[in-house]
Length: 609
Image (cartoon, rainbow, N blue to C red):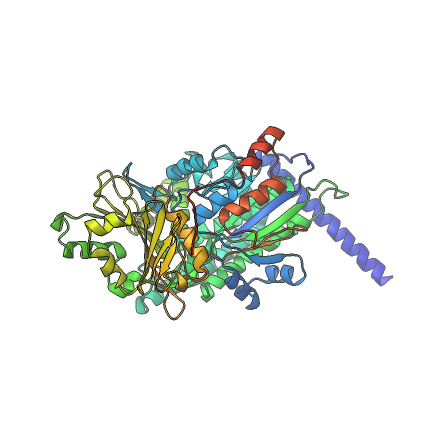
């Protein structure tokens, strides 16, 4: 009798919970003006991306107990986990372009320079992201067609895109029906609102503590102040919670394709290292979001549970983070200033030599904070006058601190003499002597001592340049590798041996250097004996180039019979998998898509040693 009674209580509580959940999300859908969708024959999918988490560091986080939900799913067989290789550059824009549209061609880094247009391309700028999206899509359907996209560079043809740079427009989030609708979810969940306040308070206290520590133990943290850490904490927590709520609501609405990118770990890893306790704590929060999303995915809706689209869950990362040592700490100046000093020693154009350097250590959190500041600016006029004045003064103070640290908004309307664009341990160097890409032999003729002096520099591991249709890789130990064409060769020690798989690295560099807007010279940071890689940005963990785990992300799925891992040797390999299994296209469009798969991107021949 007691067992029967307990089961009845459980059934009643389960029914009440289902009714409450159904009512809450039905109300949200009505507020948003986005009703539930009719279920078709397709299975849905949810991609939860953990930005910057390598396969190895995921395993470490699980083993140390920071990701209990993921650990439980792995141990019970609910998830199949494998590593994959993301290609070069190992950056979020390149990987998202490959994943969503199957084409990352001519994305040579996180930022780069287009000599013929005198344009510094910054993928974190919405106008540049929109321009890139048009170039990479080329008429192919994105894998998020009819779905939703949260916190991304590209939208993948999603119907709903929240804080997705390629779709940002002048309408403010908190002024829009969509924004206010999602915000109302907090009001419908008082306990969740209290949880958000607790998370903000804990994050703010931790950030203040780390800023105080930076006063006595110098690192990459900004100078101490009180307001900007608070804004960073608020923006990080709000963005995490809103996108988690959005994904849960989308599952309730039977949206066929959902992508959510969680950037908290990548941001903290850049500042403190990939295994630092602060980075692992960021993963604990993401693990909590995964728990909520997975629970929603498995929860039946409706009285008999018949009205739920079946969903496959994918957990993945776009790249890893390798522990790093900044080049600036080795030499007391950035790579760009160092290159210019070498050129001035050669009396190249005397004192008239100009440098434009594109770099920034950890943009994610600052971007979200700036976005939130603009949202709050719109709301100021609704406040009482006295409160408004105080609010404006605080906002302007924080805005000044944020923009003082921002170094990417240069005016490059004039042709500079030297442009150095850093993406972690990979730097592209452009010489303004010509508006076209230069071959390596031209660089050697124009600047006879530059390459030798760079190769003698501690912290520089290899130099890479074009030689017609081939690629030359010069190693710090004297090795020379020629890649491509009919005369591939290796002379001396393999210059790419310190960076992992030499053949894979050679193939990726060969393709990268023949992108139209790759640098005249590419510089790779050296691998240190302790396993760190030298980075050209101010970071304690880095990605974008080669070395360590930065090109070794992970992917895990609940999909039955999914073939993952070794089949994915480049970010572009993800697109055919999702397109074939999930994208709903018409017959003629599908034939065109099938013909395009397998022939995406560069056509440069690659015959690496």
